[in-house]
Amino acid sequence: MEERFWQKFYDYTMPTIIRYPQITIPEFLQIPANVLPDKAAVLYEGAELSFFDLRQHALRLANALEELGVKKGDRVGIHLPNCPQYLVAYYASLMLGAIITGLNPAYPHEELLMVARQTGLSTVFTLDETAERIKALAQDTKIERIIVSHRHLYSLQKKTDIACETGRGWYNFHDLLEKYPEPRRPRAQVETTDPAIIQFTGGTTGIPKGAVLSHANMIAAVMQTSPRMYPILQFIPPERRKSLIILPLYHVYGNLVANWSLFNCTTQVLVPRFQVDEVIELLINIDEITYFPAVPTMLTALVNHPRIKEVNLGRKVHVINSGAAPCPVELIERLRDMGVFITEAWGMSETSSLGIVNPILGKKKPGSIGLPAPDNDIKIVDVVDGKTEVPRGQPGELLIKGPSVMMGYWNNPEETAQVLKDGWLYTGDIVVQDEDGFIFIVDRKKDMIIAGGFNVYPREIDEVLYRHPKVKEAVTVGIPDPYRGETVKAFIVPKEGVELTAEEIIAFCKEKLAPYKVPKEVEFRSSLPQSAAGKILRKVLREEEMKKRESGR
Image (cartoon, rainbow, N blue to C red; front, side):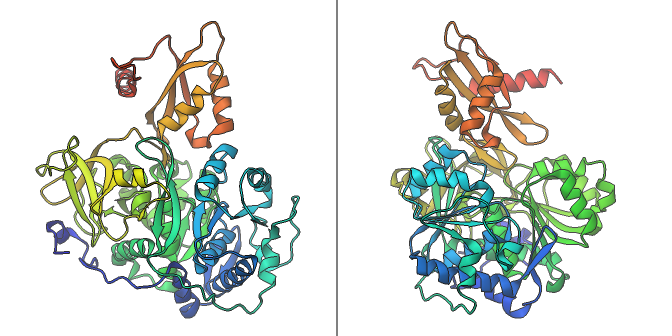
């Protein structure tokens, strides 16, 4: 690709063209295992696992999975929080050419069932404390193998009993490792163009679907994001590098950072959940953090914590990247006042989490998501016809093309054809590009809600609400939330002659939706605004809500 006008604003370490290594994702393991074998690959709840041992465990598990019948193309679900077992299962499965599907441990049965059926999961990793959910899932699907572990790191290193019922097709994670004390590399012929991950996202219909990312897609994302860190990383010896990973590894953003950490010989400080008091305590007691990838809700909670001065953030954390949701300019300025290098980036599941980035030492513009990453090209087109490029400075839909753009949606050619046209990904984001090439998001074509960095698709929640026996009509919208960025509000018309409370609605949704999708506010109405064709006008309700909140300031 010829040099683009915006590339003159790149950091001095950022290339305009990258030569990508022709390797698969697990081959990243050998870099730190070879050059820093004794360094901690993972710090987790006071214990550590070296880079050498991480690779050995992944090889052992790969040998065991191969014996159990896992083969190239099989879909493997990882139903785990952030823990060392997640990384071992991830790299072991990819060594065999299996395709990973990350499963949010908070998913209720119905969401797990949807993913399992769409992908045809044959193997699932889970913890003993969540095993009952997978047991129920296996009864309704064709899952053949369930591999169970304790949450703690010691369960990889010594014999442990599993505190749950097991049966045919159930295996102890540690027992599988024990079978292969001297593992060999699997001989599966895995190509860089083979699918590696099915990353579930939503779509124009609101029905979640799986973005298929190849090994090459994920390798490209790592290679595109690494040079932007080098203005700082070059001064930090590999022996000192640590990344703080609170982002879920099953999320595309966390997935990218895990692979980035391996490539840059960086210890992953794994945190299974975001509890602000616990994170503050961790930051106070750790020597330094090289890279902290975060979402705005995390950063808001941290900078407003009463003990934040004890952390001395500017001396403790070198680079923070905010992604997954727009980061308020005021929050960015506060972090810079503390002496932190704070940068913002934009990506999607469909772009392997990487697409547009801000420089660290280069020019910055408040509110901008930055410049297209190396080897990425963009178009901004008319929202109506989807073809005519709009003049610079005018809003239009963002189209992106590049090596990290997905292969397509899993078994969904219709949706793939809607968003991938001649290699261009139609993102659904309405943006403006200024005279220097910096991109600003001004609206969303889709009705998606971003709550704490997670994509929430209103129609999915609407469908659940309509299943409540007392609901006549329902629609959900995103409303501003000072902590999560956005949260969900439901507007409901009850059936005639029934008593219905907000508490009933919320309790009903909690049984069928992940926690971040559950409405936080419920408003009952006698009717909802509709078009002439009878379609409920979600946009009208959203505008009403925004005006009401603005007038209440």
